[in-house]
Image: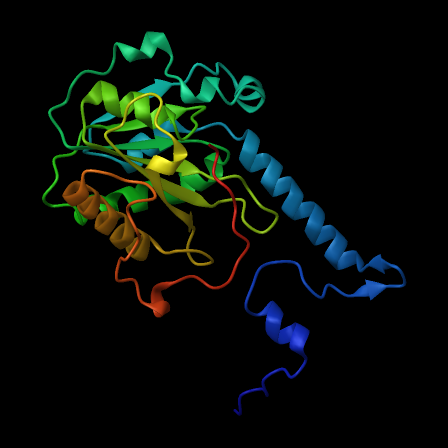
Length: 258
């Protein structure tokens, strides 16, 4: 059977390249019913992702065989977390006693951020892919953090005494990306680190974003280069050998929960 001819309409061809809402069509002065309903569904999924609770037991089960430490930020509930970003960057004093110098070089922190949905779908396979690509590193027990912002990893990494912390965290949902995961790398973690002192690999969400293998390769390359330079941030340029075929299609870029 012959293949159907390629679409010639520019809008149709453009829609095949992105999940963004483009060329939705009109009924009079309004969107079509299908487009309107699709928008409402996407908005509901984004809201659900922001408010979803972190399922730590499911993550523990998926990480079977690995040591896991469960921690909380000072944001005691989801409403506080959303209203007080500063509290999401600080470790609950009651949980600080659970951490001690580990003798490890690297810590992986899994935080819910602004999308627990992203964490549930992508954090464990990404963490496993990353660990497999870091044979020369000693790794502390994996930390799972509730109501976490990126900077919470600084205090955790300092308490564990590691050289590098990799925070895997749910990014701010977009209307086409409710499940995007970000990875933030910070060398010499300690409270007070600036965002300019981190590197970020974002939009990890196969099949529409960066795949686990490609993301893990990039994070591992950055980790090894950070160890060579003893720094992360603007002075560490991402020159990892990721080919064009491994990159995701053009999609809406969500933002991180800094």
